[in-house]
Image (cartoon, rainbow, N blue to C red; front, top):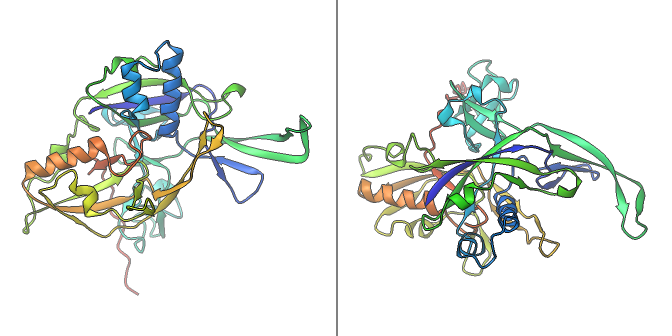
Length: 364
């Protein structure tokens, strides 16, 4: 697989998806750009540029879903606070904590029963995306604002009386970034030639325009830190290598009857390394509901539950280091679960993020 990191800058405000708030007349946008939305917008842009639907590149990349675009998470507006080779946004690991009193105290790893090392306050699960700053990881959330309008009565073609609503939008100028995987059999120039897209909803009302830049990653998701460096040099006393899988996008798993399941199984991993001995250690399971709108048929998509992005799954693997590295490389390249073309199941192995430990709680 060829890896790219695509950066998108909002040239217009964005409406990237709806989340119903507690108030019935307030719609919240999701704080990212969905990979499936990006892939659909990319397909439209390629056709508008003259590519035919029966073109072999289009058929393999789009129709057969061999092109995978992960979620584009919010990035720092000023890249000067980030090392040039670390200007990437990742899903916030579910194991990361932040001080309840003052989020500026930083991000920490450890137990929620611990306390903030700076003020001794209680901790809570961190939200948003994470970027590796020059001296420490930083939490990032996009800038948003509210637009208020009136619903339209489609029968009378007039404003519905008393039906005022507010919609949260992502601000113009916001930056987003995410990982893209493309088979080596496909010419990357046809992908990277696209430098402008319209994503999300209300594109005809002055929303959704983004400009794109594509950065090739010749050695995988972290060119300066390939998998060989992220994998431990030596196994433990039992001959096992310990790694953590960080879900960058939701993981969709089903049983033989197509019912959703939320436990990663050894069989899901064995397809990447059948001769290895896989062990899955305990982890906190969070779920999210996948949905959206199918523009072609003008209908809502079938909602599916999935393991949430940000979930961290610790593994122990017994086998030769070369075989372990090859299996983990296959997991990063091809993902886990279903929905590769929609960007689901994107996994990073031991991403190079380092969080200071929270202060251990004092026994009462």
